Amino acid sequence: MAETRWLDEREERAWRGLMAMQDGLTEFLDRRLRTRCGLSGADFEVLAHLSEAPDGCLRPFVLGRSLGWEKSRLSQHLGRMERRGLVSRDRCPTDQRGAVVTITPHGRELVEAAAPRHVADVREAVVDHLTPEELETLAAVSDTVRARLAALDERRAEP
Amino acid sequence: MAETRWLDEREERAWRGLMAMQDGLTEFLDRRLRTRCGLSGADFEVLAHLSEAPDGCLRPFVLGRSLGWEKSRLSQHLGRMERRGLVSRDRCPTDQRGAVVTITPHGRELVEAAAPRHVADVREAVVDHLTPEELETLAAVSDTVRARLAALDERRAEP
Image (cartoon, rainbow over all chains, first blue to last red; front, side, top):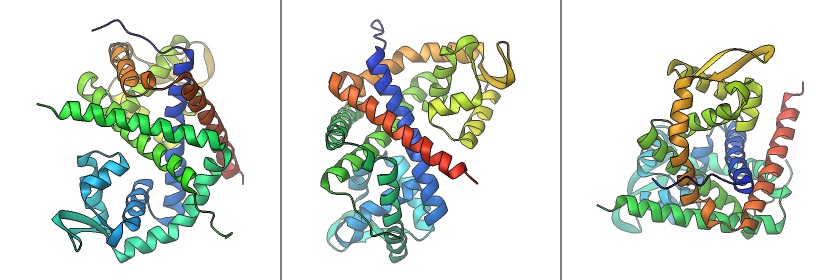
C-alpha cells in the first residue's frame, strides 16, 4: 500500500465538518418528522421522490439512484413502507418493463401534510442561512462526489 | 401556520444534492470499513475522536458534540462498542468530574489499522476532487449549520 497522505488542516476541517453536519442534520430532521408527522426522514425522502413522479411511480433502480441508496437498503426499506400502506410494489400503467414502486393515497396524504413543515425545518436549519454562492457550491460539490461514487461503484461491479 | 415558502430551483438543487451525497457517502465509507476493517463508519468516527484525545478519553458530552450525535444514540452505540471491547466507560485519570469514555488497546489497534485505508477512501471519493475553495466553503457551511442546530437544540431544551 502506498504511503498514507493524511488530510491537511483545511481538508480535515472540511471533512470532519461535513460528517458532523450530516449526522446532526439527519438527527434533527428525523426527530422533527417523527414527532410531528409520523414519518422517518427516510420515509419522507422516498415519498417525496415518488409523489413528484408521473403517476406517483418509479422503477426501484431510478429511485435508488436519486436517493443515493444501495439496492439492499432500498428493498428492505420499501418492504417496511409497503407493510405500513405507504407504497405498493407492482406494475406501472405507463411502464411495462418491470416492477415499479407506487405511492399509495395514504402515503401521498402523509407526505403532503409533512412537506410544508419539513421545508420550514430545512429552511430553519440550513437553507435560509447560506448565501447563494454557498448553495451553488454545495450543489456542485454534491455533483462531483456523486459522480465519483458512481464511478467507484461501477468499478466494484466489474468482474 | 405561515404560508409555505417552497425551495426555489437553486435551493432545491443544493438541498437534494446534499441529501443524496450524504446517503451515498455514508454507504460507501461504511461498506469499505466493514469489509476491510471490521468496523462500521460510526465505530470508526468514535474511535478516531477518542484516539486523538489526551489519554484516549473524552467526556460523553464532548464526544457527542464533536460527532453531532444525540445523547441517546451515543449512549446506545457506546454500549455496543463496550461489549465488543472497543471502548470502556469509567473514570479518566486527568478528569475527576465524571464518567468518561476511553478507547481500549484493542480499539486503538483497530482504528490505527483502519485509518490509512479510510483516509484513502475519503480522498478517492471526496477530498482529492474538490478545489481549495470548495473545501473552505464546505467547512464554513458546516460551521453555520452546526451553530443553527445547536441553537435549535437549546431552544428545544428550554422549559
